Length: 233
Length: 136
Image (cartoon, rainbow over all chains, first blue to last red; front, side, top):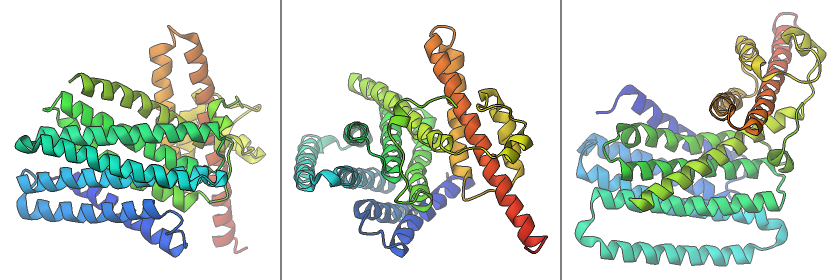
């Protein structure tokens, strides 16, 4: 049974996702941050779809669970493209976009192949535990990708505050979700990781991205060295 | 099970790393701003630095002023970071003095950030007062 707080978090998440897309369109930044905006659009549709399934089939229904976990897995794969989009932003001055494109194609094919093999091997037991494990692995791959990107940001001494903030927000999101799913795998009965943490972590990314796009101008610069060793003041 | 355990440990480590970096980014941006004399006077700050212990008092003063440019989000992040540093100081301080020194320095950055936010809010409130009450 959903309480008022659940509905609040749900509506807040949806409002922030719509805000990111509308804000990007009105500021003519939709194409500059295309994967990010597409993800927010897909996430908003997923939120509406989840609401529909809960209203029509119930929170405990099998239909909702399947919709939630498989939809979430597809969104995670879509999020990989956000990571690759951020790779392109970080490497754009090095004119390495063709390598990033090739890597993204390889990643897409690789993820599709691995997912296909896993689903094929597990088709006799596509249980709740299986989808939790799949989500855990998908988020962990995303976490590894974003960690490598963070390494590149530090190494290349990226100074664009907006890009740094988008990368770090995504890092927090991937690591929090990856930890949540791992905890869920280890302790399936834990209420905290089943009902409380996922919606809160899910709201973090639209909140952080909405704030970054809204309040951090494109031209703001900050030396990454200040993150590595900040001085006392 | 082992795989899930490894993923949990790595994820928690990286979550801490990203969280600390994200908050340091906000604090580092605050450190670039110089405090005005009126803010120093209003907050009772003497000298260049601000002690980490001043954070709670400064935050209460910040809460008294109306929000400026959506700074509540950043203040929330810095507040969470300050609490996290307090925990680091408490847990690792007695065993690892370097960790305690680092946490003290970072908490001082958090307090400085709160002072900068207070400065901005005081200036904003003054502008509102001048516009709406003095008709300037």
